[in-house]
Image (cartoon, rainbow, N blue to C red; front, side, top):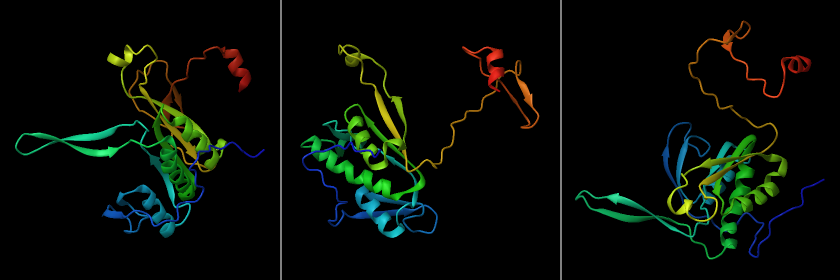
Length: 230
């Protein structure tokens, strides 16, 4: 049965914005052949950058996308800079204030559609947001990628529950989310492995693999029930 749920808002536009894009600056070529499909660093609006990639390299030309858009935090972010005379000044970094949630969705929606068009069939998207807007983005991604393309929501604890958060009278808002979607079921995934030294006691030797290994505790299973599953 086709997926029919979609997020609607008053200013939603289902085109990919055919107006001339903002200027994109090519800053540095790190390697490759010097084309946008190589190891190239751009500075500018990523809407323009993705539209350039789509025009020059075509659909399905990238393997991995990570997006860290504004969070609808209603804040203006600054950076403290130290001057040569020892003084410090604050300079603006980016503005995360929006006239409405509709305006923020107008920003995000075409970018998600462009990412989907650019991803290879084996490609993946990681979208970083927090409690303010993750639920809206997931509805959009389910529509664009399909609900079966959702793989994981990775919860990142970015702060300790202290101070005002601990005294707020509610659970602390101390986590961010990474939504993991793929273009198809043939996606590329590299398991996260950590090597560390452990005592050899209790380990077994795998002659075929040429390495030592340990078995996990059986938990609720017994040795007999595990043997019946073999």
